[in-house]
Length: 289
Image 1 (cartoon, rainbow, N blue to C red):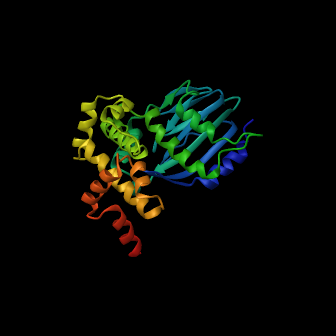
Image 2: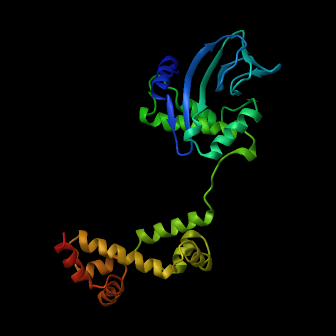
Image 3: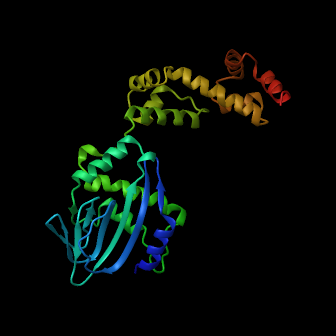
């Protein structure tokens, strides 16, 4: 059983302005009404999005009638006259909001402006749509409580941004995707940093990422203008320097922990990079503190 009054109060108290990575929203009001009846024809200067959890009725916008039933989502756009009518009442959730354009990315402003002009007004059978799951996750349930209050603004931001994919045109959604090559490079770098004690052969890391050795090598040379081998060496030196300054490990133990095949090779490589052998580097840095 949903606690509608409690959910309504929580949302209207805790989520009035939502800041996210690409947009800021001003919330006019939230609504959780287990039995909403007719309203008069009216319009808003902002967006209002509704989700029907139960009941039947109809929504009218600019002379077009849309039947309402459980699972229906519909959007009222700024300046558009609309009306809800129902004989037995609707269990409905809704949010009214506007974009703070001064604190939004251009792509997000354009997307919501496009939504105001070209939204798909009403969508059916949406109980399993990600947007519906977001709506329901904000409801307080009797005996089960709710999400931590600190999580609700982030969830609300995600909900509002999801309206772009639900009601908007496919070509107008402002989703910025990282190139797959960037993701692969990041995964490779993380794997190397977490496994410096190992051999880290090019073929082993390529197999872990499910790419060819040639492709992995090219990711480094084109992505960070550094060879795969040079990156591993610099990471080993970086970690070795960190251990020299923050631990009491011996030079031999640090060489092993950072994947050098011998103390001699570690000392030679470290001295080339830092202009000091490991022992003197540790002593000089600690003395200078």
